[in-house]
Amino acid sequence: MQVTNDMSLLSLITHASVPVQLIMLMLLGISIMSWTYIFAKRLAIKRAHAQTRRFEDDFWSGGDLSMLQQAVASRRDEQGALARIFDAGMTEFLKARRGNASGDATAVLDGPRRAMRAAYQREMDALESHLNFLASAGSVSPYIGLLGTVWGIMHAFIGLSNMQQATLASVAPGIAEALIATAIGLFAAIPAVVAYNRFTNDIDRISIRFDSFVDEFLNILQRQVR
Image (cartoon, rainbow, N blue to C red):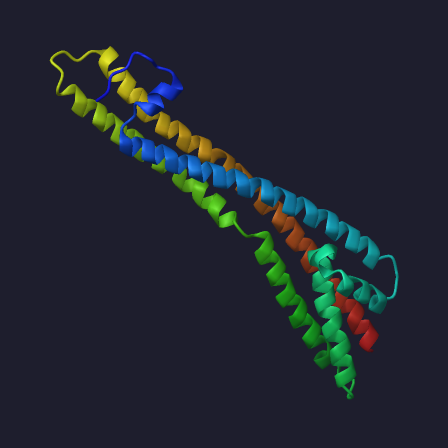
């Protein structure tokens, strides 16, 4: 065990045992990845809200749906998730209406319904990407840090067995080094948990808006078939 009188954070980390340092490095990597996903997901959700609001304004402005569908199809990536759901449903509706000479409303609407549900699922999968990592980081990081703490304390007490006189000054640095691992674990976990809960709530709200739009759009298409 390395005993040091320097109790600064950097000194404690550099004098920690190799397994504890590896655990700290792992937690640092988890924290960096978490913050990367947090910033990226925050921007993605903010963009999704703005694009959804803009498309809803265009959709409910009373314009021709075919013209709106052509505008969306020409710039699908820029229009947002809800516009792509609309485009999938409207494209399938136009195909079904041209190919259904009998005028069966159920047959005409079945294709758009399935197309929009498939598009909806794709968009939700994209919005929910990396949330599992944040959930895992939030739940596992404290235990990884605790593992480093247990190992460090064990290492400190093993080192004490080789000393003729054990004092608090001799054991304190080793225990402090070990506790840093738990602190780093909490530093990695807390932002991940907060972000996961916030993003889950935001995505649920977006999902409700998408669901409502699909139902309302199907009602509009049903009126057009009659």
